[in-house]
Image (cartoon, rainbow, N blue to C red; front, side, top):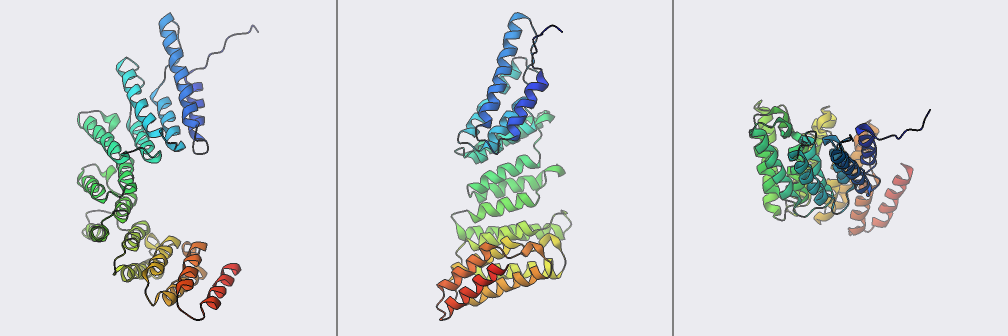
Length: 352
């Protein structure tokens, strides 16, 4: 056979860009390499248009893969570059690249890139993108209909910045939407509770967190929603109290833990079973409480973990962090036998 020149087609480019996107969590430079391929594709198409030949043009899928590589790479500047690529994408679409219309997935990835790459004012920029999606959809552009991931990504951005007020306002907006596919789920509520736990106003934070938790349970009891608080929501509420520094914190977190044990372990409701994170958060609260009962209570809670685990509840397996917190609590106590007790606990860790 005579030698022929082989030109890559759109599948070849898309597959190669996709490979960089798939490996982007392990290679922070994946976004840059993926974009280089995309730009080669674009420039070759431009040259082909100029001389009347044919070459594959970039598609929405190609751009989305590059954006995903930037988001998963978590490199500084990745969010800014994602916004620049969106503007470039929109310009090309306006110039006649009909296969380059941004869609919901495009915007979701860009919002993720803003969040994951540490972009300044990430929550504000992500929220602006969400508004653009809502406006476009309301004007008839079904390709930009916000979905649950769209809202949850913005909630995560508010959560990361400790903006409980904005997170709760957006949650209320989700609840009032007619779209059942974008109603809040466990991730949504957990993000709002976490946002409050990171708020500087700790007194307001626990008050709003409790009100939100009551609202979840109230809506479920009234039959307004099929969602009710699960382990992640309970844990987020505990964390909010644990970080509050409130005098009532220790009482409240142990109360919540007892309720989870009653419903999830003894009652058999797997949706609210406590896990190792639950116990660690409670033990942390104990360790920081300076309560004179911290020594005995921490040992008691750790023993409950061990007992439930021995009964077959794998989610409550005592972890190194749990033991370390209890060891720290013992070391800070004024008990005369604390060194002996700490050594006993160390031996229990070694025997696990």
